[in-house]
Image 1 (cartoon, rainbow, N blue to C red):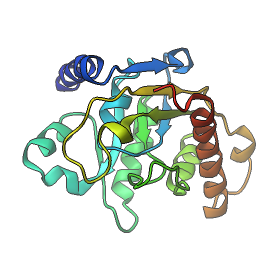
Image 2: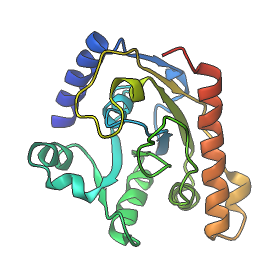
Image 3: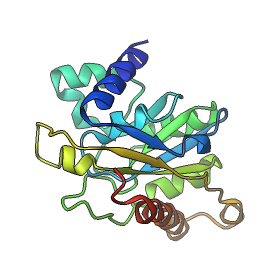
Length: 207
């Protein structure tokens, strides 16, 4: 319930102050589990992605964010999966796998952290691992304009158009037949980032 309330408040806010638009909504699966993966350049990215699709998203986020008083309360009640920044967090991985297995939507920012210069960074192998193990499609998304509205280390935002571009689901049937391992995971992650980059190339400047 809290997720839905915050989502609608955020949607109205973004529409009024960031001229928020979505392109490619028809590419979002209406049922079944999938992973939605987007570039990460601003603290606004999670709520922007959440209001871009009608289905609820379970975001994987750094556990340290839960220690902020108000933000922590919101995150705990908004379907987030806290993950330790260092080391292998098996509990978080199991929770992420369970979301997809139960037909839910998992939200990930493959780069792992916000960019400092708006340029796309290489993806971590984690999303490749999750895509391989869950066998669900990955929906790429590119968020244009969030860096201008609220870049890293800035706590206030300025009015700037924001566009979320959603691409067609990516399937990795060929990779499923290969032996799992870090090299394969990284290859899957690289392909996801390549398609996010293609969305940027096609839509850059339209935000």
